[in-house]
Length: 224
Image 1 (cartoon, rainbow, N blue to C red):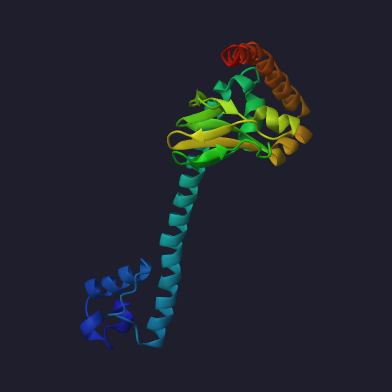
Image 2 (image 1 turned 30 degrees about the horizontal axis):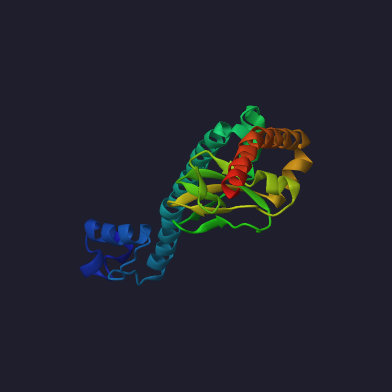
């Protein structure tokens, strides 16, 4: 550009450093506009430098952004996988089965005091607490605290019935959600996983049955 434009614009391209200023501004796609070529050959060279600028700046930035996104996705997958592996409902599954479940989960965030589910809501999803705490309102004056790794709503989802209790976020609560559509997709692709989920859910119901009976007895004795 110095050789092409120095005679037409000696004040702007009269030296190599002056031409380098234009080249740098054009390559970085900044284009201040204070120095522009005016000759046909200079404009043609300017077009070439503009295209080189796209290749040197825009493409590497896109590659870096894509790599960052992929790394973030891999990290989130590992975190989610570790959380799911600690949930008792999925504790007896192998690595590949947990990985398949992890793929169909998505996250939702609830602020303190916001209901996650309400009694009589359709049981179209089960929830796993990723962070924060939630409260299950079993009955007036009787509550259960759910913390990180706890889950709820699995029986309503599996039995296609409505939820029996309100679950309200006590703190800022982030939950993993496995909805009915994802569950159906998982059942079609991996029926053995669904059998395992049903088996573990039924075992959990049986394990909680003595506690429920004791609670009903206490309530009856208090009423009498």
